[in-house]
Image (cartoon, rainbow, N blue to C red; front, side, top):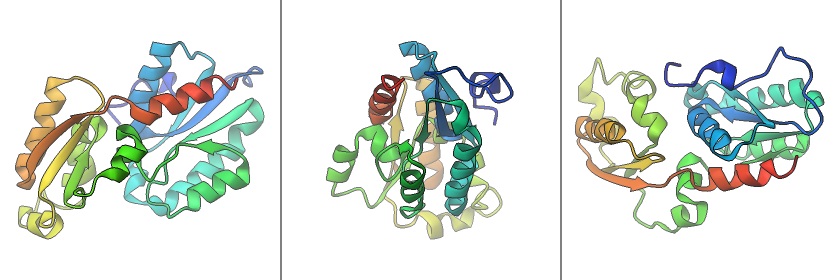
Length: 215
């Protein structure tokens, strides 16, 4: 997708088998920018990354099988393989698969929770009426929400899909006024109040840091 970094920074498939001590991250494409930013900021040159399409989130029943296939395909070339997904709507199936395969994954129900911090997110008692955006979804709102739900053709469906929501919560990973403006526009289009929370990389950053030390 156009918002992802150059694919050459994300996957080393096709090169010589990875050297001893190299780690592979099998990641959701929605986290590509964040992972690359963390790698570059921390000098984690021993970590390679390959991403599955972010659109799989519209079909979470396909995530587990896709992750399993990549683990089996690449694990022999790496010292360790890690899965940069939370549960992401798989109903525990991804966690069970990772346990069976002996690979670690990111803790939490979804990226909204681990960006904010799983404990902090779980402590909210008023979030049932909140619709969340991350930096990725602010950029890709039309491709992942507006058009798949048919709202570009039938805006009259907005109350049916979003009538039970009261506000849009934008969890910002970066300080980007342009993305904040995009998120505000998404809230306006959906008829929701707007709230911005700066989360940074949250537990994604601490999880990757822990994995980086396992080389």
